[in-house]
Image 1: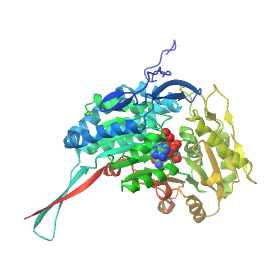
Image 2: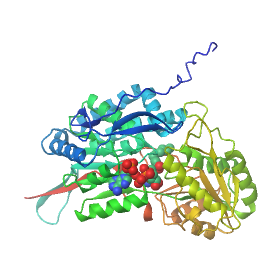
Image 3: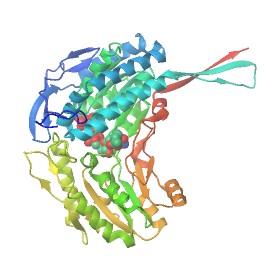
Length: 496
Ligand SMILES: NC(=O)C1=CN([C@@H]2O[C@H](COP(=O)(O)OP(=O)(O)OC[C@H]3O[C@@H](n4cnc5c(N)ncnc54)[C@H](OP(=O)(O)O)[C@@H]3O)[C@@H](O)[C@H]2O)C=CC1
Ligand SMILES: CCCCCC/C=C/C(=O)O
């Protein structure tokens, strides 16, 4: 190809979008917040305001919950045959596919995501979620059971009711869809409160589902801050909460919801360890060690932020990881070559800085690469940072930073590697690199985590469940397990 035209293989370049002011989406219609207040939308790659969205609060949540309640109690959705619900989800997937470039542009400008990755990760995964749960909806059904007395007994999977979904800033589309798709497939209705830093794509998803035939009031989106989130949790018209976010906020939500015995699923923080054994394929292991902590600029709850390396390999691996991490292309998310974009918001960047400062005052700690902001276009950039020599009980090793910061520690035995991997309060993901199949199974079974990757990191598919143990939360997303979170089982027993 010449003359700067895109080739047929390369996707067209994505440009920064011009935003129209966003409204709430309630009862199938766009509307302003009752207070009339609006919230700024900031482009993290420049730090500049690029638009506004309605700033919903408790009053708007009340209106949205009433719409969802009416749609659940009196509307057609829960009674729509699962196969027809599946058709709506499949149609939505197709409409989202047609709007791929728009979705990339919105998600990238909102969250600072590199456009190339946003296409293959965020948009692709969002679409495949609707397809996957559309497929599962088609197979929804109960079972007949044998009893010891003369009766006929069967089970019926039933939707729970109105779901309150509260989502974080790091994968706005995916983590919304991983709740919306299974909840709707099961016949529930929903009020969704996206993160205040990244509200844009939630509104497009609601609009697309409506266009695909979702009845009014089934999915309602209230953009807003903490007050709106808290109002979702407290509202008596909400039957269940699906939350992804920090352990700190998850704990508050579980406690508030506990007052009314509202069930909650919690996908919370992580501090995941990746172990490199002496027999690992080092090219793969080093590559994955880097991807695991720079992916999504480190804003990945399953980021591999603690690398544990067999002592004989420790110096060489640390040097290789630090050397290569410093060379990963960082910059404007709209440049197709960019792999590391900005941090999604100023407050998140400041948190990363505070954690790395701890390493500077730790005796014996050494920052092998990074450890500073990158001054570029006024954006919230932070250099990939690799630290060695931290004590295992230091805050940098034990707490979630949520940025591109990796600590590396040596180990001498398999037992020690497992003990170190399990030594935080979190249990979201873990990984190991080895050529020994026995060791792979043995260590995987001993790691306290909802998902374990062997000789890879971060491979995710809508069919494979994930979620936390320990303080990383409870419940599962993805897979049939993710659908089950939105269903109650009713048993019917008929005397014969
Ligand atoms: N386990 C998992 O699957 C995942 C976990 N995460 C975790 O999410 C965190 C990062 O996301 P972040 O957005 O900062 O997380 P937060 O916990 O700060 O916020 C998550 C959501 O909860 C809302 N919220 C905040 N306070 C309350 C409250 N008191 N009541 C109800 N809602 C509230 C937020 O609103 P607002 O935006 O207005 O503050 C946001 O919509 C990390 O800890 C990460 O590990 C992220 C992705 C996946
Ligand atoms: C390949 C990664 C897709 C991300 C899926 C959503 C999970 C988010 C998180 O754990 O932060």
